[in-house]
Amino acid sequence: MPVYLLCAYCEIVMPRKTFEIAVADLTQAIGLLVRRVRAAAASHELSLTEGAVMKRLATDGPATTAELARAENMKPQSMGSTIAALAEMGMIARKPHPTDGRQVNIELTAKGAAVRKSTRDAKRAWLTNAVARLNARERKTLFAAGEIIKRLAEK
Image (tube, rainbow, N blue to C red; front, side, top):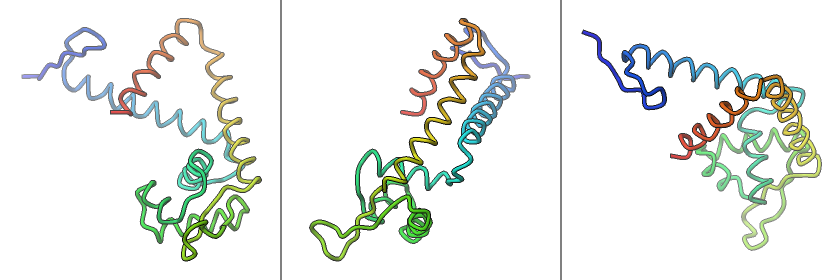
């Protein structure tokens, strides 16, 4: 006997398998969208972790390797490798910590800020052009779904 589930969004009763398939389809669609947006800015070839570190430095300011590792739920050694790669590319600089001479602060360089802006602009341009090709009803639905997805992610 099939198990049924009330789909609050659809206001219908769906077989569990159909609901699970719909969730899987949503997961795949979001993943594809993320990959396409990332591909729009692929010329900079930053890893997800490198991009996350640059965003954190741009948003929160200088931080130590340990602080960045905690913020990204990584081991300090792994973060050290990420920091080394970003430093080699000229995206970040190491500066003495203002109050603790044993520590080093990591900060975004002008080049890092410019690459971050260029990457963000390329992603937004691609998504803006893609959304512009939708009709008004589809855009309204997409933006409403965006709000729902944001709520899900914040829980």
